[in-house]
Length: 224
Image (cartoon, rainbow, N blue to C red; front, side, top):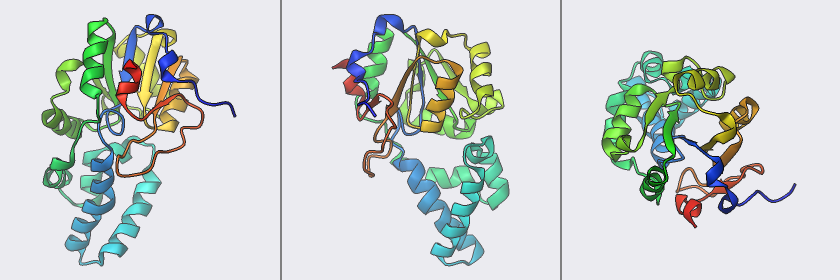
C-alpha cells in the first residue's frame, strides 16, 4: 500500500465546505473512552451490586451490540437501557472534556479564508449541548448538525443524503475530518472527495492505523 497523502498537499482553493466531527476529532476522545469504559461501569456496578469488572464486561457486550447505530450514540437510549442518569454521570467527569491542540487556530484560519464550517456529529443533542458549553466552540460554526436530528448515524448513507438537503454542499468541493474510519468510508462512498483521518483521537492511547487515509496528529499540520 502506498503511503498516505500528506495533508500539506490539500488544495484549499478546491474546497468550499469543511465538515468536522466532534468527539476524537476536535475534542480529545479520552473523555468518552473514560466515561463509557470506566465511569459508567463503576456507577452501574454500584447501582446493581456487581463487581466492577463483571459490570464492565456486561456493558462492553451491550455497547458492541449497538455500535454504529443511532442508539449507541443516544443518551436517552442508554438512560432507559441502563436505568442511569447518563447526563448526571457525564457532569461528574466533565472536567475531562478537552479541545485538541491547534483546533481553535484552525477554525479561525478557516473562517478567515471564507470556508463554510459545519460540525457534523453523531453526538446526542444533550451531549452536544454539554460539550459546546464546556469548550465554547459553537460560535465558530455556520451550522451544527447531529445525526439524531437527521435520523441516521454518520456510518449510514442516509445521513449524508439528509445532511446535503439540510446544509447543501458540493461533495467534490468538501473536506471531511473525522476519526472514525467507518464514517470516512461512508462519506467516500457518498462522493465526498477530500477526506482526512485523525491518528490520535484519544491522547492517552497510541496512534491508530488510518488505512491509507491522509491523516493528522494535530490540527497545526493543516497550516504547516
